[in-house]
Image 1 (tube, rainbow, N blue to C red):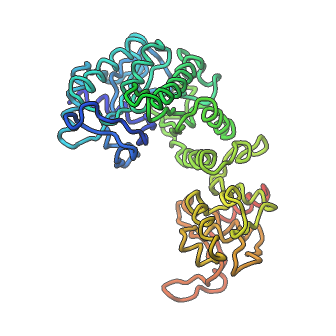
Image 2 (cartoon, helix red, strand yellow):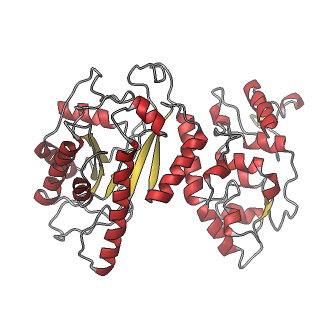
Length: 444
Protein backbone atom coordinates (compact mmCIF):
# COMPACT_ATOMS: atom_id res chain seq x y z
CA UNK A 1 0.00 0.00 0.00
CA UNK A 2 2.90 2.35 0.70
CA UNK A 3 4.31 1.67 -2.76
CA UNK A 4 0.89 2.26 -4.29
CA UNK A 5 0.51 5.61 -2.54
CA UNK A 6 3.90 6.79 -3.80
CA UNK A 7 3.65 5.51 -7.37
CA UNK A 8 0.00 6.44 -7.96
CA UNK A 9 0.73 9.98 -6.73
CA UNK A 10 3.71 10.23 -9.10
CA UNK A 11 1.54 9.06 -12.01
CA UNK A 12 -1.05 11.82 -11.62
CA UNK A 13 0.98 14.17 -13.85
CA UNK A 14 0.38 11.91 -16.85
CA UNK A 15 -2.58 13.37 -18.76
CA UNK A 16 -2.75 10.97 -21.72
CA UNK A 17 -5.39 8.74 -20.21
CA UNK A 18 -8.67 8.29 -22.11
CA UNK A 19 -10.68 5.48 -23.65
CA UNK A 20 -9.27 4.13 -26.87
CA UNK A 21 -12.15 3.12 -29.09
CA UNK A 22 -10.32 -0.19 -29.53
CA UNK A 23 -11.80 -3.67 -29.71
CA UNK A 24 -9.83 -6.67 -28.45
CA UNK A 25 -11.64 -10.03 -28.53
CA UNK A 26 -10.87 -12.41 -25.67
CA UNK A 27 -8.87 -15.44 -26.84
CA UNK A 28 -10.59 -17.86 -24.46
CA UNK A 29 -14.19 -16.74 -24.66
CA UNK A 30 -15.78 -16.19 -21.26
CA UNK A 31 -12.95 -17.77 -19.25
CA UNK A 32 -11.04 -14.50 -18.92
CA UNK A 33 -11.21 -11.28 -16.92
CA UNK A 34 -12.21 -8.01 -18.55
CA UNK A 35 -13.12 -7.10 -22.08
CA UNK A 36 -12.39 -4.25 -24.45
CA UNK A 37 -15.13 -3.00 -26.76
CA UNK A 38 -15.14 -0.20 -29.29
CA UNK A 39 -16.78 2.20 -26.86
CA UNK A 40 -13.66 2.03 -24.68
CA UNK A 41 -13.66 2.28 -20.91
CA UNK A 42 -16.16 4.09 -18.73
CA UNK A 43 -14.37 6.83 -16.81
CA UNK A 44 -14.92 9.05 -13.83
CA UNK A 45 -12.63 11.94 -12.96
CA UNK A 46 -11.28 13.16 -9.65
CA UNK A 47 -11.22 16.81 -8.58
CA UNK A 48 -7.75 17.38 -10.06
CA UNK A 49 -8.73 15.90 -13.43
CA UNK A 50 -7.31 12.40 -13.02
CA UNK A 51 -9.08 9.44 -14.53
CA UNK A 52 -9.83 7.07 -11.67
CA UNK A 53 -11.52 4.11 -13.34
CA UNK A 54 -8.12 2.92 -14.53
CA UNK A 55 -5.35 1.92 -12.19
CA UNK A 56 -3.02 4.77 -13.10
CA UNK A 57 0.40 4.01 -11.71
CA UNK A 58 4.16 4.01 -12.34
CA UNK A 59 6.21 0.84 -12.45
CA UNK A 60 8.89 2.78 -10.58
CA UNK A 61 9.78 6.37 -9.74
CA UNK A 62 13.48 5.57 -9.31
CA UNK A 63 14.95 7.48 -12.25
CA UNK A 64 18.43 7.86 -13.72
CA UNK A 65 17.44 11.04 -15.57
CA UNK A 66 17.47 14.56 -14.15
CA UNK A 67 14.70 16.33 -16.10
CA UNK A 68 14.28 19.66 -14.37
CA UNK A 69 10.46 19.71 -14.53
CA UNK A 70 9.90 16.17 -13.22
CA UNK A 71 9.02 15.24 -9.66
CA UNK A 72 10.82 11.89 -10.09
CA UNK A 73 14.12 13.37 -11.29
CA UNK A 74 17.15 11.76 -9.68
CA UNK A 75 18.26 14.95 -7.88
CA UNK A 76 14.87 15.49 -6.21
CA UNK A 77 14.48 14.45 -2.58
CA UNK A 78 11.27 12.43 -2.77
CA UNK A 79 10.16 9.00 -1.50
CA UNK A 80 11.12 6.25 -3.94
CA UNK A 81 9.42 2.93 -4.68
CA UNK A 82 9.21 0.27 -7.38
CA UNK A 83 6.82 -2.60 -8.08
CA UNK A 84 7.99 -6.03 -9.08
CA UNK A 85 6.13 -7.52 -12.07
CA UNK A 86 4.37 -9.95 -9.72
CA UNK A 87 3.23 -7.16 -7.39
CA UNK A 88 1.83 -5.01 -10.18
CA UNK A 89 0.03 -7.94 -11.79
CA UNK A 90 -1.55 -9.04 -8.50
CA UNK A 91 -2.55 -5.46 -7.64
CA UNK A 92 -4.24 -4.95 -11.02
CA UNK A 93 -6.19 -8.20 -10.86
CA UNK A 94 -7.31 -7.75 -7.24
CA UNK A 95 -8.46 -4.19 -7.94
CA UNK A 96 -10.41 -5.40 -10.96
CA UNK A 97 -12.10 -8.17 -8.99
CA UNK A 98 -13.20 -5.61 -6.39
CA UNK A 99 -14.69 -3.45 -9.17
CA UNK A 100 -12.31 -0.58 -8.34
CA UNK A 101 -10.99 -0.35 -11.90
CA UNK A 102 -11.73 -1.42 -15.46
CA UNK A 103 -8.22 -1.28 -16.87
CA UNK A 104 -4.62 -0.25 -16.39
CA UNK A 105 -2.57 2.82 -17.31
CA UNK A 106 1.13 2.01 -16.84
CA UNK A 107 4.11 4.31 -17.09
CA UNK A 108 7.49 4.42 -15.41
CA UNK A 109 10.56 6.45 -14.62
CA UNK A 110 13.73 5.21 -16.32
CA UNK A 111 15.21 2.49 -14.10
CA UNK A 112 18.88 1.71 -14.91
CA UNK A 113 18.23 2.05 -18.66
CA UNK A 114 15.30 2.39 -21.11
CA UNK A 115 15.64 -1.29 -22.09
CA UNK A 116 15.64 -2.51 -18.49
CA UNK A 117 12.55 -0.42 -17.72
CA UNK A 118 10.69 -1.77 -20.75
CA UNK A 119 11.61 -5.34 -19.78
CA UNK A 120 10.05 -4.82 -16.33
CA UNK A 121 6.86 -3.38 -17.85
CA UNK A 122 6.61 -6.18 -20.41
CA UNK A 123 7.13 -8.83 -17.71
CA UNK A 124 4.28 -7.34 -15.66
CA UNK A 125 1.92 -7.09 -18.63
CA UNK A 126 2.68 -10.64 -19.77
CA UNK A 127 1.70 -11.90 -16.32
CA UNK A 128 -1.52 -9.86 -16.43
CA UNK A 129 -2.44 -11.09 -19.91
CA UNK A 130 -1.27 -14.72 -19.95
CA UNK A 131 -1.11 -15.84 -16.31
CA UNK A 132 -4.14 -13.99 -14.93
CA UNK A 133 -5.96 -13.96 -18.32
CA UNK A 134 -6.97 -10.31 -18.07
CA UNK A 135 -7.93 -8.98 -21.51
CA UNK A 136 -9.36 -5.62 -20.51
CA UNK A 137 -8.04 -2.21 -21.50
CA UNK A 138 -4.32 -1.46 -21.01
CA UNK A 139 -2.53 1.75 -21.95
CA UNK A 140 1.27 1.80 -21.58
CA UNK A 141 3.90 4.48 -22.04
CA UNK A 142 6.84 3.45 -24.21
CA UNK A 143 10.24 4.57 -22.95
CA UNK A 144 12.19 6.71 -25.47
CA UNK A 145 15.52 5.12 -26.35
CA UNK A 146 14.34 1.53 -25.83
CA UNK A 147 15.11 -1.21 -28.33
CA UNK A 148 12.71 -1.51 -31.31
CA UNK A 149 12.22 -5.20 -30.41
CA UNK A 150 10.94 -4.21 -26.96
CA UNK A 151 8.67 -1.54 -28.47
CA UNK A 152 7.22 -4.23 -30.76
CA UNK A 153 6.69 -6.68 -27.89
CA UNK A 154 5.00 -4.07 -25.72
CA UNK A 155 2.71 -3.07 -28.58
CA UNK A 156 1.36 -6.62 -28.85
CA UNK A 157 0.34 -6.56 -25.17
CA UNK A 158 -1.50 -3.23 -24.96
CA UNK A 159 -4.53 -1.52 -26.50
CA UNK A 160 -2.99 1.94 -26.66
CA UNK A 161 0.60 3.13 -26.46
CA UNK A 162 2.04 6.60 -26.09
CA UNK A 163 5.47 8.22 -26.21
CA UNK A 164 5.70 11.56 -24.40
CA UNK A 165 7.19 14.31 -26.56
CA UNK A 166 7.56 16.23 -23.27
CA UNK A 167 8.31 19.77 -24.55
CA UNK A 168 7.39 21.77 -27.68
CA UNK A 169 10.93 22.24 -29.04
CA UNK A 170 14.31 20.53 -29.19
CA UNK A 171 15.90 23.65 -27.65
CA UNK A 172 13.70 23.43 -24.54
CA UNK A 173 14.31 19.68 -24.34
CA UNK A 174 18.09 20.25 -24.30
CA UNK A 175 17.75 22.78 -21.47
CA UNK A 176 15.16 21.08 -19.26
CA UNK A 177 15.75 17.40 -20.13
CA UNK A 178 19.36 17.19 -21.39
CA UNK A 179 19.46 13.37 -21.24
CA UNK A 180 16.52 13.03 -23.64
CA UNK A 181 16.97 13.41 -27.39
CA UNK A 182 14.35 14.46 -29.93
CA UNK A 183 15.17 11.55 -32.25
CA UNK A 184 14.87 9.03 -29.41
CA UNK A 185 11.27 10.24 -28.92
CA UNK A 186 10.26 10.41 -32.59
CA UNK A 187 11.75 7.05 -33.61
CA UNK A 188 9.34 4.98 -31.42
CA UNK A 189 6.44 7.09 -32.73
CA UNK A 190 7.36 6.21 -36.30
CA UNK A 191 7.76 2.52 -35.38
CA UNK A 192 4.36 2.44 -33.64
CA UNK A 193 2.69 4.07 -36.64
CA UNK A 194 4.28 1.55 -38.99
CA UNK A 195 3.29 -1.35 -36.71
CA UNK A 196 -0.34 -0.17 -36.54
CA UNK A 197 -0.54 0.05 -40.34
CA UNK A 198 1.03 -3.40 -40.78
CA UNK A 199 -1.28 -4.92 -38.16
CA UNK A 200 -4.30 -3.46 -39.94
CA UNK A 201 -3.26 -5.08 -43.21
CA UNK A 202 -2.72 -8.44 -41.54
CA UNK A 203 -6.04 -8.34 -39.70
CA UNK A 204 -7.81 -7.59 -42.99
CA UNK A 205 -6.54 -10.96 -44.25
CA UNK A 206 -6.40 -13.05 -41.07
CA UNK A 207 -8.79 -12.38 -38.18
CA UNK A 208 -6.51 -14.24 -35.76
CA UNK A 209 -3.42 -12.16 -36.63
CA UNK A 210 -1.64 -10.49 -33.68
CA UNK A 211 -3.13 -7.14 -32.71
CA UNK A 212 -0.67 -4.27 -32.40
CA UNK A 213 -1.82 -1.15 -30.51
CA UNK A 214 -5.36 -1.33 -31.90
CA UNK A 215 -6.35 1.83 -30.02
CA UNK A 216 -3.67 3.96 -31.69
CA UNK A 217 -0.98 6.08 -30.10
CA UNK A 218 -0.97 9.39 -28.25
CA UNK A 219 1.53 11.80 -26.74
CA UNK A 220 1.73 14.43 -24.02
CA UNK A 221 3.24 17.91 -24.07
CA UNK A 222 4.03 20.09 -21.04
CA UNK A 223 2.75 23.66 -21.41
CA UNK A 224 4.15 26.63 -19.51
CA UNK A 225 7.52 25.20 -18.45
CA UNK A 226 9.25 26.58 -21.56
CA UNK A 227 8.90 29.84 -23.54
CA UNK A 228 7.27 28.55 -26.77
CA UNK A 229 4.31 30.52 -28.09
CA UNK A 230 0.91 28.94 -28.77
CA UNK A 231 1.38 29.10 -32.55
CA UNK A 232 4.52 26.98 -32.34
CA UNK A 233 2.75 24.46 -30.10
CA UNK A 234 -0.27 23.91 -32.33
CA UNK A 235 1.92 23.74 -35.45
CA UNK A 236 3.90 20.98 -33.76
CA UNK A 237 0.67 19.16 -32.89
CA UNK A 238 -0.54 19.48 -36.47
CA UNK A 239 2.72 17.97 -37.71
CA UNK A 240 2.48 15.06 -35.24
CA UNK A 241 -1.06 14.26 -36.39
CA UNK A 242 -0.05 14.27 -40.04
CA UNK A 243 3.30 12.50 -39.79
CA UNK A 244 2.69 9.95 -37.04
CA UNK A 245 -1.07 9.41 -37.20
CA UNK A 246 -1.63 10.18 -33.52
CA UNK A 247 -5.07 9.79 -32.01
CA UNK A 248 -4.57 12.59 -29.49
CA UNK A 249 -2.04 15.15 -28.34
CA UNK A 250 -2.55 15.87 -24.66
CA UNK A 251 -1.54 19.23 -23.19
CA UNK A 252 -0.50 19.33 -19.55
CA UNK A 253 -0.29 22.71 -17.83
CA UNK A 254 3.01 22.73 -15.93
CA UNK A 255 2.51 22.34 -12.19
CA UNK A 256 5.52 23.67 -10.26
CA UNK A 257 6.74 20.71 -8.18
CA UNK A 258 10.50 21.34 -8.10
CA UNK A 259 12.58 24.51 -7.87
CA UNK A 260 14.90 25.44 -10.71
CA UNK A 261 16.08 28.69 -12.26
CA UNK A 262 14.83 27.58 -15.70
CA UNK A 263 11.29 26.93 -14.46
CA UNK A 264 8.38 29.06 -13.17
CA UNK A 265 8.43 29.81 -9.45
CA UNK A 266 7.01 27.20 -7.09
CA UNK A 267 4.22 29.55 -5.98
CA UNK A 268 3.09 30.30 -9.55
CA UNK A 269 -0.28 29.00 -10.71
CA UNK A 270 -0.43 26.48 -13.58
CA UNK A 271 -1.64 28.01 -16.89
CA UNK A 272 -4.92 26.07 -16.90
CA UNK A 273 -6.80 28.55 -19.11
CA UNK A 274 -4.02 28.35 -21.70
CA UNK A 275 -4.23 24.55 -21.59
CA UNK A 276 -7.99 24.80 -22.15
CA UNK A 277 -7.56 27.07 -25.19
CA UNK A 278 -4.95 24.70 -26.65
CA UNK A 279 -7.37 21.78 -26.32
CA UNK A 280 -10.03 23.84 -28.11
CA UNK A 281 -7.56 24.61 -30.92
CA UNK A 282 -6.65 20.94 -31.09
CA UNK A 283 -10.32 20.02 -31.60
CA UNK A 284 -10.58 22.64 -34.36
CA UNK A 285 -7.71 20.94 -36.20
CA UNK A 286 -8.93 17.36 -35.67
CA UNK A 287 -12.68 17.75 -36.16
CA UNK A 288 -13.34 21.11 -37.83
CA UNK A 289 -10.73 21.07 -40.65
CA UNK A 290 -8.86 24.16 -39.43
CA UNK A 291 -5.11 24.44 -39.96
CA UNK A 292 -2.71 25.74 -37.33
CA UNK A 293 -1.91 28.79 -39.47
CA UNK A 294 -5.61 29.66 -39.69
CA UNK A 295 -6.01 29.62 -35.91
CA UNK A 296 -2.86 31.64 -35.18
CA UNK A 297 -0.14 33.42 -37.13
CA UNK A 298 3.28 34.94 -36.59
CA UNK A 299 1.56 38.32 -36.11
CA UNK A 300 -0.83 36.85 -33.49
CA UNK A 301 1.16 33.94 -31.95
CA UNK A 302 -0.89 33.46 -28.77
CA UNK A 303 -4.46 32.33 -28.17
CA UNK A 304 -6.98 34.85 -26.88
CA UNK A 305 -7.76 34.02 -23.23
CA UNK A 306 -11.15 35.76 -23.37
CA UNK A 307 -12.56 34.12 -26.51
CA UNK A 308 -12.51 30.54 -27.67
CA UNK A 309 -10.35 30.08 -30.81
CA UNK A 310 -13.31 29.57 -33.14
CA UNK A 311 -15.03 32.81 -32.10
CA UNK A 312 -11.70 34.60 -32.28
CA UNK A 313 -11.20 33.36 -35.86
CA UNK A 314 -14.73 34.41 -36.80
CA UNK A 315 -14.22 37.96 -35.53
CA UNK A 316 -10.97 38.22 -37.50
CA UNK A 317 -12.65 37.03 -40.73
CA UNK A 318 -15.86 39.08 -41.09
CA UNK A 319 -15.84 38.65 -44.91
CA UNK A 320 -16.60 34.92 -44.48
CA UNK A 321 -19.90 35.65 -42.70
CA UNK A 322 -22.87 35.50 -42.58
CA UNK A 323 -23.21 31.86 -43.64
CA UNK A 324 -26.56 30.72 -45.07
CA UNK A 325 -27.39 27.51 -43.21
CA UNK A 326 -29.78 26.46 -46.00
CA UNK A 327 -27.10 26.56 -48.70
CA UNK A 328 -23.63 26.41 -47.15
CA UNK A 329 -21.36 23.38 -47.53
CA UNK A 330 -20.60 21.15 -44.57
CA UNK A 331 -17.09 22.59 -44.37
CA UNK A 332 -18.43 26.17 -44.22
CA UNK A 333 -20.99 25.24 -41.55
CA UNK A 334 -18.18 23.91 -39.36
CA UNK A 335 -16.60 27.37 -39.42
CA UNK A 336 -19.60 28.92 -37.65
CA UNK A 337 -19.23 29.35 -33.86
CA UNK A 338 -21.86 27.27 -32.11
CA UNK A 339 -22.10 24.62 -34.86
CA UNK A 340 -20.20 21.38 -34.27
CA UNK A 341 -19.73 18.26 -36.44
CA UNK A 342 -22.96 16.64 -35.22
CA UNK A 343 -24.96 19.84 -35.60
CA UNK A 344 -23.59 20.45 -39.11
CA UNK A 345 -24.60 16.92 -40.18
CA UNK A 346 -28.08 17.47 -38.77
CA UNK A 347 -28.44 20.76 -40.65
CA UNK A 348 -27.42 19.15 -43.96
CA UNK A 349 -29.92 16.31 -43.42
CA UNK A 350 -32.80 18.53 -42.23
CA UNK A 351 -32.59 21.17 -44.97
CA UNK A 352 -33.36 18.56 -47.62
CA UNK A 353 -37.00 18.67 -46.59
CA UNK A 354 -37.50 22.19 -45.22
CA UNK A 355 -36.12 25.71 -45.06
CA UNK A 356 -34.43 26.02 -41.67
CA UNK A 357 -35.36 28.78 -39.23
CA UNK A 358 -33.88 29.76 -35.87
CA UNK A 359 -36.38 27.60 -33.93
CA UNK A 360 -35.45 24.69 -36.21
CA UNK A 361 -31.77 25.18 -35.43
CA UNK A 362 -32.51 25.26 -31.72
CA UNK A 363 -34.32 21.92 -32.01
CA UNK A 364 -31.29 20.53 -33.86
CA UNK A 365 -29.06 21.38 -30.90
CA UNK A 366 -27.24 24.38 -32.40
CA UNK A 367 -25.79 26.80 -29.83
CA UNK A 368 -27.63 29.92 -31.00
CA UNK A 369 -26.06 32.01 -28.26
CA UNK A 370 -22.97 32.11 -30.51
CA UNK A 371 -24.20 31.03 -33.93
CA UNK A 372 -26.93 33.69 -34.33
CA UNK A 373 -24.37 36.45 -35.02
CA UNK A 374 -22.85 34.61 -38.00
CA UNK A 375 -25.73 32.95 -39.91
CA UNK A 376 -28.64 33.55 -42.27
CA UNK A 377 -31.86 31.56 -41.86
CA UNK A 378 -35.19 31.40 -43.68
CA UNK A 379 -36.89 33.61 -41.07
CA UNK A 380 -33.91 35.96 -40.84
CA UNK A 381 -32.56 36.33 -44.40
CA UNK A 382 -30.53 39.44 -43.57
CA UNK A 383 -29.05 38.03 -40.37
CA UNK A 384 -28.04 40.22 -37.45
CA UNK A 385 -26.35 43.45 -38.51
CA UNK A 386 -24.24 44.30 -35.46
CA UNK A 387 -20.97 46.11 -34.93
CA UNK A 388 -17.85 44.13 -34.10
CA UNK A 389 -17.83 45.61 -30.60
CA UNK A 390 -21.43 44.53 -29.94
CA UNK A 391 -20.74 41.00 -31.17
CA UNK A 392 -17.58 40.91 -29.10
CA UNK A 393 -19.46 41.95 -25.98
CA UNK A 394 -21.96 39.16 -26.55
CA UNK A 395 -19.31 36.49 -27.17
CA UNK A 396 -16.79 37.36 -24.50
CA UNK A 397 -16.31 34.60 -21.97
CA UNK A 398 -17.43 35.86 -18.53
CA UNK A 399 -16.00 32.86 -16.68
CA UNK A 400 -12.45 34.24 -16.89
CA UNK A 401 -13.37 37.07 -14.52
CA UNK A 402 -13.32 36.24 -10.84
CA UNK A 403 -16.03 38.74 -9.95
CA UNK A 404 -18.57 36.98 -12.18
CA UNK A 405 -19.35 39.17 -15.18
CA UNK A 406 -22.45 37.94 -16.99
CA UNK A 407 -22.98 37.64 -20.73
CA UNK A 408 -25.13 40.39 -22.17
CA UNK A 409 -28.45 39.70 -23.84
CA UNK A 410 -29.08 41.75 -26.97
CA UNK A 411 -32.75 40.85 -27.20
CA UNK A 412 -34.21 41.39 -23.75
CA UNK A 413 -33.74 44.14 -21.21
CA UNK A 414 -31.69 42.88 -18.24
CA UNK A 415 -33.62 42.45 -15.03
CA UNK A 416 -32.94 42.15 -11.34
CA UNK A 417 -35.44 40.05 -9.39
CA UNK A 418 -37.92 40.41 -12.26
CA UNK A 419 -37.59 44.24 -12.44
CA UNK A 420 -35.82 46.15 -15.23
CA UNK A 421 -32.46 47.64 -14.30
CA UNK A 422 -32.03 51.42 -14.39
CA UNK A 423 -31.06 52.76 -17.82
CA UNK A 424 -27.55 53.63 -16.63
CA UNK A 425 -26.83 49.92 -15.99
CA UNK A 426 -28.32 48.38 -19.13
CA UNK A 427 -25.04 48.13 -21.05
CA UNK A 428 -22.59 48.44 -18.18
CA UNK A 429 -19.79 45.90 -17.76
CA UNK A 430 -17.27 45.47 -14.94
CA UNK A 431 -14.18 47.62 -15.49
CA UNK A 432 -11.83 44.73 -16.40
CA UNK A 433 -14.26 43.60 -19.11
CA UNK A 434 -14.39 47.09 -20.58
CA UNK A 435 -10.59 47.17 -20.64
CA UNK A 436 -10.54 43.84 -22.48
CA UNK A 437 -13.11 45.13 -24.98
CA UNK A 438 -10.90 48.15 -25.66
CA UNK A 439 -7.79 46.01 -26.17
CA UNK A 440 -9.59 43.53 -28.43
CA UNK A 441 -11.06 46.36 -30.54
CA UNK A 442 -7.55 47.62 -31.20
CA UNK A 443 -6.38 44.11 -32.11
CA UNK A 444 -9.30 43.64 -34.50
